[in-house]
Image (cartoon, rainbow, N blue to C red; front, side, top):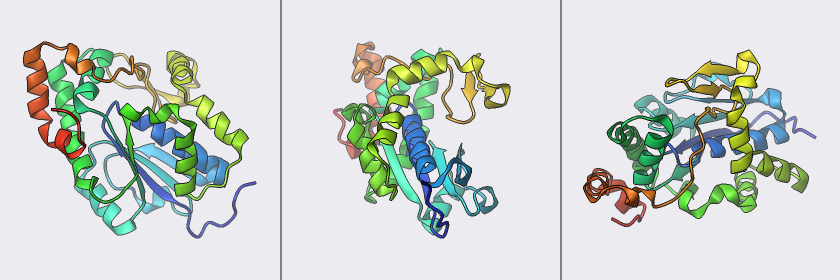
Length: 240
């Protein structure tokens, strides 16, 4: 049964590095809120700028962000939404993006570097932090913890369904079949990719998931990445 009280429907921001399973976080939160409040009461999308109240007035909001913006940060300071952070060794994140999207590592390293400053800005504020290397997306307890933080009372059957829907194998099958989704759910996403506008998964979303693969690179490239990401590596206690 869905809750009828709309006085304090949650506003949530999921903020994470590219390739840190941030889309998993976004979708699991979206699903938890749908089960609790009903699909018609949940507005969810990706953006880097502050949301307009008219887009979610009277509803739950789930906003996915990577590098953010000044306007989004001001909105967070004012509205104080529930905020979830996801992190991954940025060297692995950049390499994963390069491998999956067939673009130069220098380009993806800059994308991830833009994300890093946003994570650093919010790292010391006590927000829930999900670390990719902990494999949080493979742990059903993650959903229970999220549900508690969102004040969602959800039965085990629904939790199991959500968890199984977003396992790596399930998402891999889903992204391989994105082209078969209804036309209104699919749009081009560059480089020949397609993206589902509901889940924000794209047709090259899933990589090999390995941690530490940046060490496969030549030593000179390892050193360049480590220097580029030194600040965030220290903040989040990754080895230099």
